[in-house]
Length: 543
Image 1 (cartoon, rainbow, N blue to C red):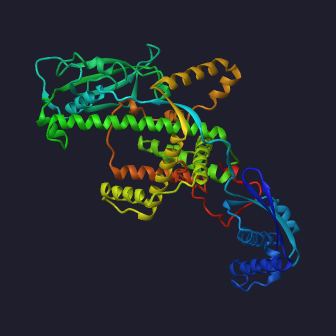
Image 2 (image 1 turned 90 degrees about the vertical axis):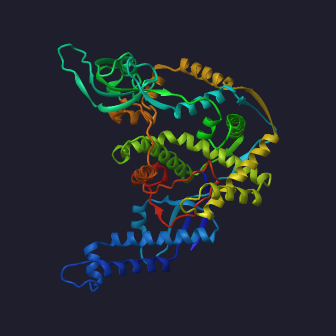
């Protein structure tokens, strides 16, 4: 078997393989024997059909196609091993398969062409002495007081209210039923599916319901029934309800107010592991200071990554792009599933394809960032620290003692995390980072976006309208029950089922879905599979 290599764009290797006459004869005979064993033809026992009758019934083209598929699968695998090619993903057949069937003759040589993705070659034109700006997150002492007040609010005792009307921040129990106000007075009001409830408990605070609903309850007396006017927001998730006026018939059945605990040592001991209020306050302050430092560090890392990708030269293979796109789409689907959306019904093939198209730019950016970090680790010989890895693994095991943990996989992830942290340490030490106040860079980005918006032509705007965010697709099918914006804790079992449904829905629309969290961990490139792709079924066509 003769093999010729050719370097192709997009990090591919082209292979021209010449099959020997002996190989073509053996492949044809093997395919014929398989058909004899498995094909049912009336008048003959299974496995006893004469060869000539079998060929007349099923045709030589079908036998040749089966022989070719088996032959290409084995020879491509052999070629990769023989040429020591670090292949990733599936093979792509470059020669038209129908032409190969016509050319194939048992006992005659045959040449075909294929291509396979390989890890990309990476060039970093600059990674030392980078100059960037990053926002510094300052510690805000006011957050400490706000957090303590939130603890007080959660620890409050609900006391029944009598002899007064409902006030802001009261806890009300109500029955309600909503209707959409018709545009024409002659039309009948339309009931809102899911827009009614009995013995519904709600805090009379802004943001707990659509605008107007809470304000309408404030001032009501116990036992009173009242028609409350409210209006759905213009950007409401359910398009047919956006900006629509509604009337809710509300009955106030019960009213309670919060009685906050005193700010003393007893309170601190009740809501925390600390014995004194001073210790409790100090722990919150330390947490917020650490959070501010971590956010500043994260801003530095993001600024350095954004600058790094400006200096990288790399041709990304389609296999890696597809894996990262599938990861992003799956994560999005899981988020929607946790919001109560039936993923199996919602994720049509068309929608998943649109989600993939929109995720592609971000997938490419994530890959570029990850590959840039990996290249720096290679150039500067940055490796994992066994002591740091052992310490983090031990810490994880102490904090998460429930359930089984794959220790080998855990160690791999921790090692990748340790290496990533060391790469950023090196980058920060070898870069010039100007810290600016929080909000400075965001303001500049918004100004740049506004300038770009002003330059849009009408044609640009029309094109933009065809590529709304994926979330708008979700909004179009969201149930009207989302009228009540209440956060409810979900059981962990339900979350696991939702995540599984989301992953299955993505897999069903993409047969070769390979999820890879590339940005948060080093890329572990899969070996080439043995299945080849016929021309017209290239990898890019399935994205």
